[in-house]
Image (cartoon, rainbow, N blue to C red):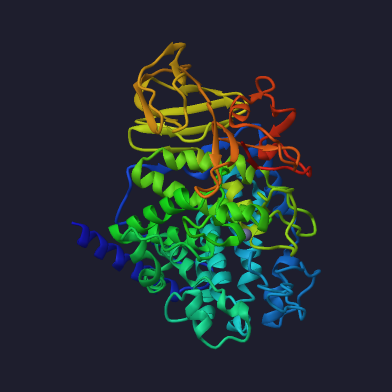
Length: 608
Ligand SMILES: [Zn+2]
């Protein structure tokens, strides 16, 4: 059964690409290929989930408007320059524009010209899918058209990270196709793939393998070929043709990464953090596309190692962008050694992506727990993009910390930032044939069809500052299904759920709670969360260096001094009032990350 279906799909895809070659660039035949594995839990379409007023919607809207307003000529400039075309417009600068100053690692100006173009395209395509904004769709189509004219292998001559940049270009083009209905995007991808292939190695290479090969400068040893398969598999499944499935297989980093992870071996220490979390998405897409259980195990174990051996109390990970050896005390040591504690937009983007995949495959609510932790304690507190390309990059957990922009303009994090904010909606709810999963407690509205009934679930909340949420159903007729409510693992014994004012049984921390009934128009669910306070040590080697946590929130002292508190004093800390953004310990104010501006703050405290 499986074989014949796959064979059929393979043939379908081959016919698709053959047909495309016979046609003009304008109409690339789109014959999507199906997954070998279809998890019971699926994602909603972007348009199905709308955020309502709150800091997440504000961040999404701001990024959407910012990238919609970026000048097309400036975005296309590096590609036009390399293609020998007229290239009007100012240089974007920073990592984005060619520069003779590039001298790695000392001067990173001109590092990877055009690298985030694909991510901006992806983010705009997703924003169009969320909002239906016509100007956004038109911009996506103009950018694809403009980029199409520039595609040439010459772009990659003397380019230090071809795989890194191409992976993002690929993502942008397949998203333009999938989410912004761009009629040319897959054909342009086909040309762009031809252009980059001569510059890619025969397989995924580790940094040490790259170092062992001839390289004009150190930047040539930093390419991330091991992240390519995810978007190659997606390209294949969205109808770009069978060669994308073959390319995905070619760049799977089995021998040096996935095989060990699948066998339960923690090989993360020493590796570059974000790209190796992102690579877990490649393992997961391999599982979906081919059914390889080994790759599902690799993604699960790898992410588990991140959550259990690499994470700060905020959910962020990888100080100085590097995974650390468990038992080394390195996480604690990093609090005085660096301000580059967590690569926030990229890290949060990768974290959400893997967590969504694994939640779908396993139904485990703890992936949702980890998403809300990263949301409130990291990405939601990112400083907004600046007109000149200054970008929030690292969250700082140093004992003397503050928020700051990255030294270089238009870095990687300027690409993932608008992508993750466009993904906020699809991260908030999931569905299966018989159920809707409420994953994040955020002001939002989800719309779907359940057995012929049109359903809208509206969530109103100020969670987590007010520890409750309210969900109301609008149905055009009564219908039976389950609503799955995430009960966080940290939830205390007084956590309650009510339907139409009546308490319901079965609240169990660390699980989705199934509330199944014949739902009627106007039915309401109310939840009250018991959020105990706790202290979390930075690592086992520093048991008295702790962060103050309540529910999903890591709380930051607004002061970079030592607060001189005892364990009991910290645990007794209280929010000033219901809904307040301030907690108090020994006369020091504590705030959640997204309520902090440019003041000094401190996450970890040495307690007696
Ligand atoms: Zn980044």
